[in-house]
Image 1: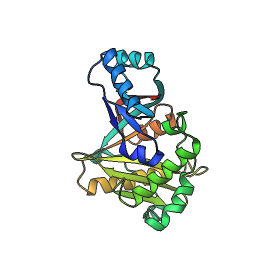
Image 2: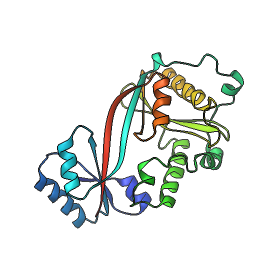
Image 3: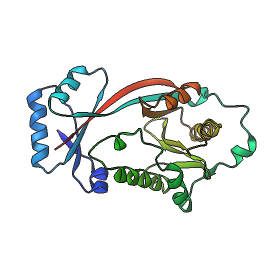
Image 4: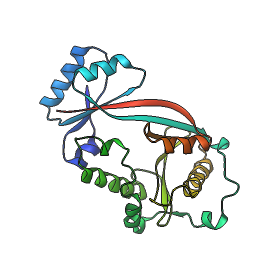
Length: 237
């Protein structure tokens, strides 16, 4: 079956859905795609675990194309490796983002997430991808898409969201171009982990792209471990 993605459909003004696999039947998947097309869907995605090679072969035979390979990392909040040498003045400069900060946050975020699937999928234009992240940041600050946004003015930010159970999720973390490898990411990550821990959450996850080696090394160095991987395919109808 194909499930409608309401927010995506409204934002892009196109009927967008996700193919939910209930069976590895080629005929069944074909039928679901044909029904989606008849129902007016313009674009569908399908997420899978990397090890499900039989499903991947089926999707490729049905003209789906690869748009993303993701890596999810996790850490227990009590095991996070805090940087004891972090400068106190810099930590004191971290603020909770409010609505008046949104324009400046969007400036910092501009062109930071070009490894994401939205910038690498021919269905979306660069302008649409830019608009998506702007809306994502705005909705996060307003408490719609996330629970807390911390930022160092004009330098970087981290978006935090409570997940199911006792886990938190780092939705996005971005450092302004030209300011990386200066400890800003570590300071923001520490602020986020501290907040999650104080909220009573026992673990934190973050998802990044397989191609983003710098991000993976950053999280691994901070004590995260790789929990799982996933792959996303898409098809334009």
